[in-house]
Length: 92
Image 1: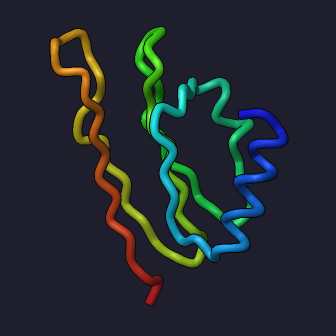
Image 2: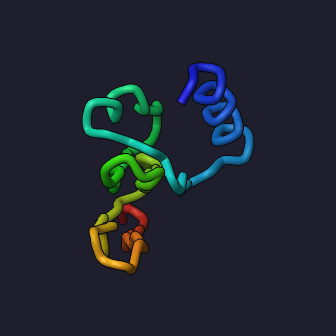
């Protein structure tokens, strides 16, 4: 994600008071995840699989609690789907 896109994302999250966001086909690797930190959000990710544009990035507002679980990762099978489950609740 370029710096200008990251700035635009952060501005839109603040403008619309977003609690949770998801970016599909985030194309994230473990090494690149450090560049995606956004103030006020805890990030969860399903990293990309090989050279395929894949991966999911989930951001949850720090005012909420969340539980993240990878249900299905992309693999070498014919089924190329990715599924994550996110439970979110208020801290109290």
